[in-house]
Length: 109
Image (cartoon, rainbow, N blue to C red; front, side):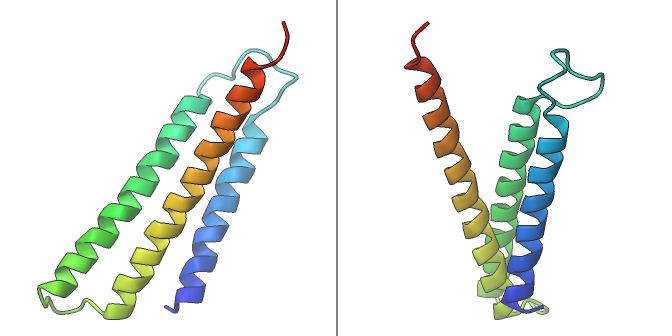
């Protein structure tokens, strides 16, 4: 697959996660639904997915460096870019969460 296809797939996955998170966030219902994951669970899953993406990238890079068959340089570069983009996205989410927390803490009570 080309790098553009991989990037588009990653963006679609991120949009699907965003849509899923927005669909689950219902301000009208104060009590969470039974079986619905909490925000911390969703955030933990996202962090774990970023970690898995980085692990796959590292494993592919190591396999390529060792000369293992079936590992193409383009696959290594795509995996590296996916890991980089997912980490940058997670960093932006973290920055927004920290900013929201700071804004809430500065609100007068």
